[in-house]
Length: 388
Image 1 (cartoon, rainbow, N blue to C red):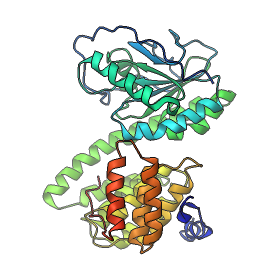
Image 2: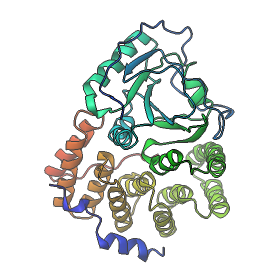
Image 3: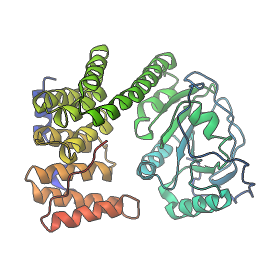
Image 4: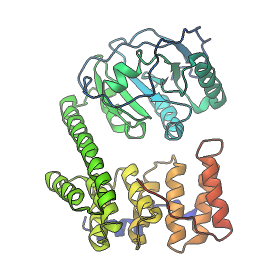
């Protein structure tokens, strides 16, 4: 039985308003013997210059070995492809697998491919064995094709690095014309994929969004540098000024408001303004679970906050959980449970944390979630943490 707090209540909706606002994927292909590439690079880093943008022809499809599913040798026009970059050590990648499997069932003619191209270590034979064992253990939990590309020059360099992507999971959708039509987190691909399959996707508009995101990333790098200086000097004036400038230039930016909220509620010592920006961010990010989760987790867990707006945190957490569309995310449940606990709703917190523990069983995050569950059951409040 799902915890009662999993249900998106009218109270939460009222609070937001108050703030003014099918291939046979089980088939396993025998692994092709590979030769480790000379001079294998480290896992993906952000490219200095972005050379792969939306609308560009998709890079070549080159792998070291097929691990699961019916194989093919190239991306053929007339077909839609999803290239999902992941790794066995990546918790968020594992969390996204049920969603990807569900999408593959929903779109059986789309070729979903899990690209294992970021395994740790230079022994590619050992890495292939690790990926193969992982995929076999997941079984139907990875209901789509899987390939291994240990040679960084084959997939990581022309796809991830060329597109300026430094983190996984990361998905690329290639449209029927052979163009890169969308790049992003797999949990956010539903609408773009629907429109790409239907042939109604506006790739020019999507390119503008991508360019804005790349500009934001460059700004973030500059901001981080200023933050490092502020941590040493104790003067956050420059950082807050940069964030005010970003908010003014993009009134719809929830991320800038969240970043400013973190500083103002912590070292900036202006919680009143922090919570105002947090409420604005809640409205702007009401359909973006990752950002909502960030608001909630920052408020309930940050070790730099002297006061916490738990009403705001719980509203963000409940919206996050409600937006999971029938596919509960254990990380989101963990955040919501913490918000419930710190709001005095301890029975509901324990019930939700148990659900998170059940969903995260045998995953990298499972151990930590169970540790927190044990703390709740013994009446102990988890310690505050360093929140980036």
